[in-house]
Length: 214
Image 1 (tube, rainbow, N blue to C red):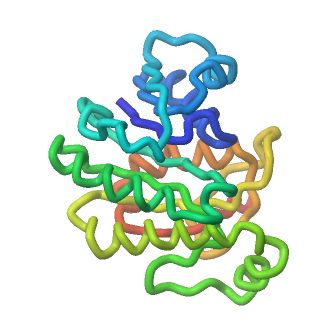
Image 2 (image 1 turned 180 degrees about the vertical axis):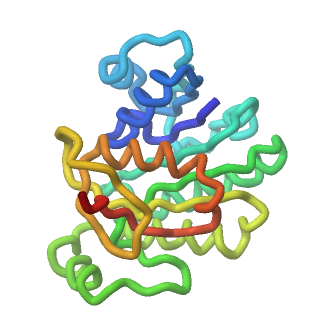
Image 3 (image 1 turned 60 degrees about the vertical axis):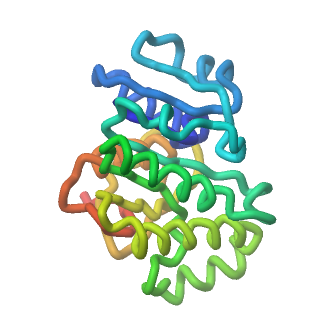
C-alpha cells in the first residue's frame, strides 16, 4: 500500500498509474477526487481520501494505517509563498508514521532546493535566484522539510528526490541518482521515484537525478 500525497499533480498522477499497473494499492489524499479519477481512471486498488494537507482535521493516524510506503509529491507555489505548508504537514505525519510502524518515506523536492547542511552548485544557485526566483517559497519549504527529516526523523527511512521537473510529455530516458541535474518529464520523474522509494541504498539521501548517458 502506497500513501501518495500530491497524487493528482504532474508527477503524482504518473506515479499512481505505474503503482496501480504493477498491482499495488494506493491511498491518495487529494483536494479534487474527480480530477484524479479523470487522470488515472477507476481502479479497485485506488482508495481516494478527499482533503488537503492544510486541513487540520485530517486524521493522520487513520491516513497511514495499513500503509507500507509514504510518497509526497506535494507542491502549491501560491500557498507556499506565505507559509511552509509541507513542513507543517510532515511534522504531523511523521509521529503518526511512528505510531503505526510506517518507516519508508519519499519526499519529492525541487532540484533547486538546498539539502540540509549541503550546497547548491553555482549553476543551480544562479538559476534559483534568476529564472526560478518566483518559487522561493517552495524552495524554503522543501529545505525546512529536509532539515526536519535530517535532525528529527532519522529513525525513519526517509529519502528525498531533488527532482528537476520540466513538463509533461513522453519519456526522454532513464533517470539515475546523481550529483548533476537534468530537467526531466513528469513521467520520468515518477518512474525514477517509484524505483527510488524501494531502494535501500537511497535511504537518508537528498540526491539529484540525471538522465543516464546512452
